[in-house]
Image (cartoon, rainbow, N blue to C red):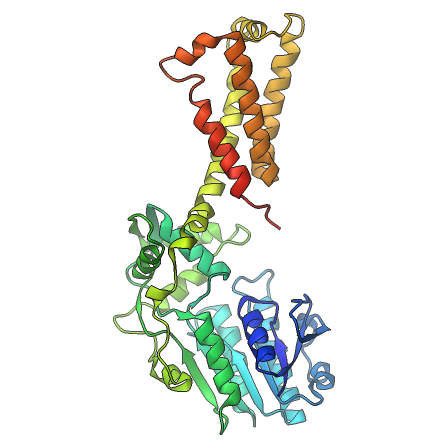
Length: 422
């Protein structure tokens, strides 16, 4: 088949594109960012600007099927949901109808409906309704939570799962029915190959429905992480926090996401997994098979690295402030004992304080991998200087110098295992 694929640069779209090419399909991907996938023909276009039927007609020549995997969980600006989830795909579906490209698969989301409570669900529901109202063999595939090792949301879930204590809204009431990304991709391939073509809505859910807290526990057990406690956050406080968090760029906690969690609350499963199993002709992957022990270290680093970065920034800031405001004669005396001439000591003290403050600022505002190594060198330099000038500090009962040994080792470890964020 000649397939037009939207969203090929995303988590699900990349997996699907690779599978389509492997099966011998001709894949033409459309979007702003080239996923650089082997065997995929790339057409550069701003999907947010392709909201009219005529925008799509030239791209549908010779196309046998269309798959739309475009989706954004967070709205970067007002109207983005409506544009990317509704206006753009509706224009595409109209073009498919005009060109008689009958087989169309729309990757939607569980809970989507034109009258849903959140803008995200309403925008997806509008596109689903438009597709199913047309003279097309259209399928709206509605997954709940999708798991995959490289998925951003899955990494976040594993990170949460390894926290020793976690306070979550609706932790025991909100339900999830996660499906593995491999099963989701297999479902899209099965729908593509189905004869006769299937129409309608397919709820793409996994075989196990559980509370959000239980899902985190399953991931924790899969990674063989230590025990953790998930405590519920009272609803009133949760919505107050969500309203504040909504102003933080990239925050997943918003009033809308809380409403989506509330909509999933209930005693039973979100949907029946049997139709998906019948489409695949095999059982769906159970969540107990998702996470593995080798993912534990990266999951812990997900929360440990930013927390350690903030803690080290506070340590350097406190070091600068106490160094400057400590009795001046005593501070200058320590510098002189370490070999700094008396005439240079005031400048050396000021320079050390400025250096400590600079490290604190860089750690918070411009974190980079090399900063861990720089901190290790600076702590080692301070330790050697004090050891030469005041070796008696090694015998200090509060570990004035001996504490630096594990700190240097920790900083070296972070330098070796951390990565620069893109």
